[in-house]
Amino acid sequence: MSCCFKGVPPELVDFIIDHLHDDRKSLTCCSLVSRHWLPASRKNLYRKLRLTILTPSDTLLYRNSIHRLRRTWEVLSSSPHLVTYIRHLHLACFNTSWGRVNVLIPAPCNC
Picture 1 (cartoon, rainbow, N blue to C red):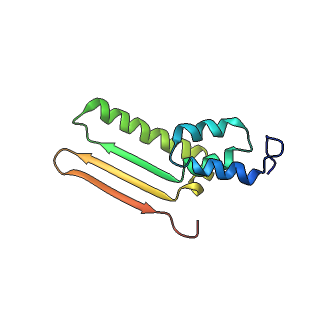
Picture 2: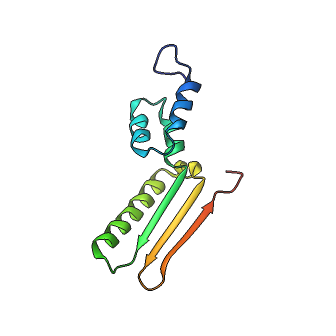
């Protein structure tokens, strides 16, 4: 992969982007800088996927959580290659009668 900055090795750019692994806003910005930055940015953006579903007791939050779930499904359905970046899938479900249930599903090692 060639780099958009003359003299900066692409491995260094990848290292810098990897350092931002917990900063979604910066990773999103990096993904828009150039097509050369996109793969490393995507790898970190989709490494951990967290989906939270709320119960209908709080209607606005419930609608927002369902909207985010649908949007995530649309993105992954329209770009199935993004699934290969997912290493951890965290599902959280909140219900007023039974509290919170968390499920962490690690990706298979051969992905």
